[in-house]
Length: 290
Image (tube, rainbow, N blue to C red; front, top):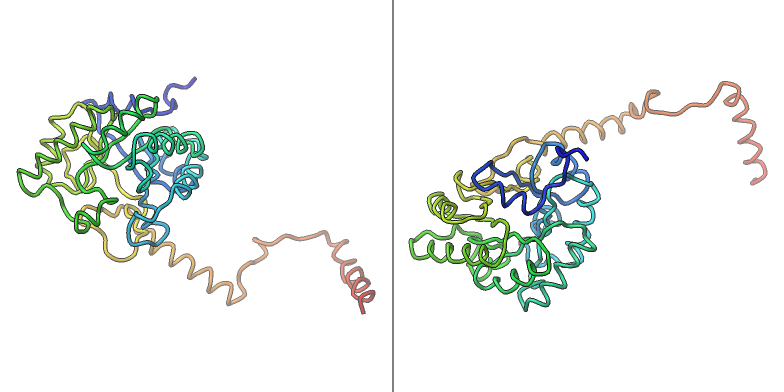
């Protein structure tokens, strides 16, 4: 077996702490997963962010388990080296550990994910323990937790006071103790995320949490300039593919309307002998219908 192409696992990510920085990007279909994997990312997050990035919704709350399974199957079909992490959608784990086990098991068995991610700290610890005891690798998520955006009062930076920062650390320690192999820190002041990272034994994956996390994650569409409208402050656009795609499709539309596409290079042909017989053969058919 080619060890350079061995699939990345949760324990691999855990062991990377202090050794190398980790790269994570979201993916919602096989083509984007394959492209990101070819670029060498460590993890592909099939995020419930698909509700906003792909399905045009205002938040992540309406994303269903069936939708997550659909997109996990698409991403896992790419056969990537990167670790495929499936997000557990709203209310798929909160009720109790048994509910969490059933739904996480579906993401693994039916969706093809090799790990799951869920939001919450102290309040999610029992669910995380149940999942890890069953052999399901779990990534935590603390700080700004989009599934709790209604309770948080919107998509806002968290831990802006020392007291609230201490609560985020408490959450991060709780998911670490429950068995998570890594934890996402979202929308925290950079100094807070740095201090939490230093106090954890598992890697932190930052999004809007500064440069001192052990790794970073961005939404595929944000990073590539495919998102229209407002972008969060923490998003860096590495390409403006939205404009490139619009220009390309505009050229396609213009060529279709002008009759210049398809041309001979993009059309099929038949032999001269058969073409000579063509009109007679078609006229015979048309004559029978007359």
